[in-house]
Length: 469
Image (cartoon, rainbow, N blue to C red):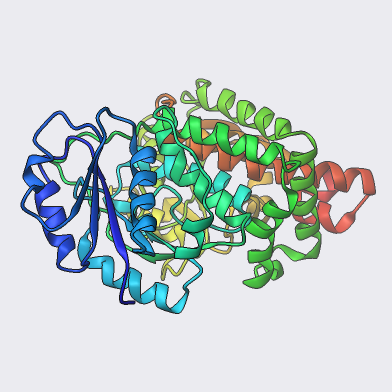
C-alpha cells in the first residue's frame, strides 16, 4: 500500500511524543499529529520533524482530535488512516502488520487487539473492556475482540462516508460508536494481536473505566433501542458462532433452543430480567457466608485453569478450604471440575495437588474429573452429594454463590454456602463477573421453568434431579 497516513492525537504527552512520532516516521511517510490544547511542551518537541501538526486552541477531547486528523488526511488524499496513541501504549513497529492486513482486507477496520495478553492488563481496564465488548458486539452484530483499542486502521471508503460528530464529554465514546455505525454501513472489523503495554512511569490514563464505560453503555443502549433491541445483532454475535464452531453438540438441541428462548426473554423485557438476576446475584455476593458447622463435608467448586495453573479466584476457594480445616482437620473434601480449555490436568486434580502441597492428606480429598461447568459439577456429583450424612458446605467465590445455590437446589442437594472471600468488593471486574453469572443463571432458570411448563423430561434430566421435581 503506497499511500496511507498515521494520525496521532496528543494531549500533554511530552514524556513520550518525540519518541513515538520519530519511531512512526520510520514506518510511515505521512504523519499527522493533532495537539489537543496541550499545556506542556508537546508541540515544541515536534517542530523539527517532517509531519503535519494541527493544534487545537483548547482541549476538545480525543474524538474531536481524531476527526480533525482524519479530515486533514481526507483533504490531502492520504488514505487509509492508521490511528495510534501518543502515550507509548502502541508500538509503531506494528504499522507494517496493519498495512499487510489491509491489503488483504481493504474494506475492513483493522483493530490492534490487546485482550489476549491478559496478564499485562490492569484488572479494572481488562474487565471494563470486556464489558464494553459485549454491548458493542451486540449493537454491531458481530464479535469484536477489543472495542476500546485506539490502534486501528480505517479504510478509505469508510472515512469518506463517516458522518459522526464529537464532544469533549463523550470523547471516549467515539471509537465505540464508529464501530457500530460502520457495521450499519456494511463495514466490519477484524483484529490483529498486539502487545498490551502499560509502563509503570506512564502518565495516568485519561480513560476512566466506570465513567467512560457508563457513557459508552448509554450510547449503545440508545443504538439498540432505536433498532428494537436488535435481536438479529445478538443472534449474529452470540448464536451463529456457536453453530459455526460446532459447540451446539455440547449443549444439545434442547439446550440451544432454551438459549434462544433466554435471549428472547431478555430482549422482550428490555433487559429487565437480566438486571433482576444481576441484583439477585449481588445480594448473595454481599451476604455473610463464611461461618459454617465444623463437621460438614467441604465441597470445592473448581474453576477453569490458566495454562495448567490455578487462577486467583480458584486459589481463594482453596485457601478458604484450609481455613475451614483449622476447625476440624479431619473433614472430608470433595473437589469438582474436569478438563477445560487445553489443560493437561483437570481442575479438581490441580486443586487436590495444591491442597496436598499445603499438608492436607491426599486420602482426605475426593475429586470429580468429568464436569466442564457448574451445571455438570452438580449433575455428575449428584449421587455423592445427595447422600452425605453430615451435610455439605459449597465453597466458591462470592460472585458465583447465587448460581451455585440455585443449581444445587435444582438437584435437591441440601447445602450451606461459604464464600471464598471475606467480603464482596464492588469493582469493574466483579461487576463484569456478576453480569456473566446473571446471564448463565438466566439461561438455567429459563430451562427450568420451560421444562416444567412443557413437562420436558429431557431438559429436566439435564438440569435437575428429575425424581425430585
